[in-house]
Image 1 (cartoon, rainbow, N blue to C red):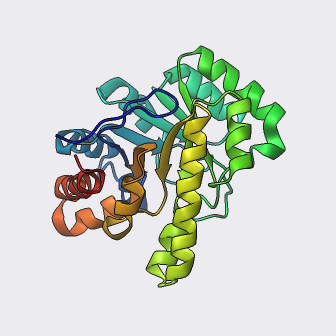
Image 2 (cartoon, one colour; image 1 turned 90 degrees about the horizontal axis):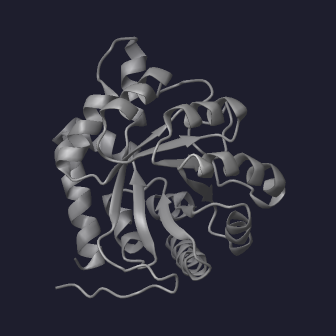
Length: 259
């Protein structure tokens, strides 16, 4: 039996949760303007394969997930839905209408291909505090996607977030580009950030760019309780199927965690 121990915030260490991001199933669908592949079907398949939650990012330009997708996911899922979104009035209204289990606030630019970096919580403390309050009151667990930096994590705590999701993109990019010294430095930053967030009472998640090759060292960090992974799993599904891609990721996470 794997060891289970208490964190400084009183949470029990144990099995790491896997949130599967289905955005890029919708990207493929939208490339042809057809009803398929259906991201809701992908979400249900992810649940059967061992996912612990489903993540979907409703972007301002609706480049992948649509409003209808969010409505159908809200009606269909038995797993928790994590709605990624920008901190805008439009998105807040959508979240308050559907009341997903979790809301993860991310920075968003129209010209970016994917989310680039974490929120600058320090620069927007007053606005984010006011933005988060009604979501929390509606029962949504609010997470902030941040770079692994102590000052941003402390600001997330001050504005009322329950969770921080640490941006793992720098670590993953350095690994895949063969910059091993940079990779190790980025991993150390994530490790220190996870410890700090946990110590001040925040739940710690992580994600962005994780693959089979990079997930192990992140999954091994005991303060992290959830990983959110999407693009790699959807890409791997082309070769082995979505269910097997998720099961293999689950196996690697569990092996790194020792459970």
